[in-house]
Image (tube, rainbow, N blue to C red; front, side, top):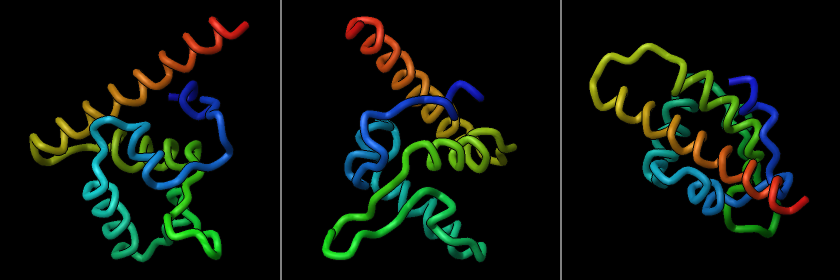
Length: 110
């Protein structure tokens, strides 16, 4: 998973819509559930990589911070129910697909 933390994005931060597009299995409702669970646990969403810009309607995200949070709190954790395992597997696939696509782009651009 260390490779994922070094993953390079084309921008330093992305909108919430763009973040969801990066992860094909991550829906807006799932992301909002993650955020609610995190806040209800006494944490701040900035620890997930989210921040606000005055005058911009949509939440902004630092994708590297979000991947690290996702890995630590949703992917590399013990699951209790089958649907949690399926969710973990789908997130892993999305991250791997994005990493492979990025590697292809880097190779073809040089």
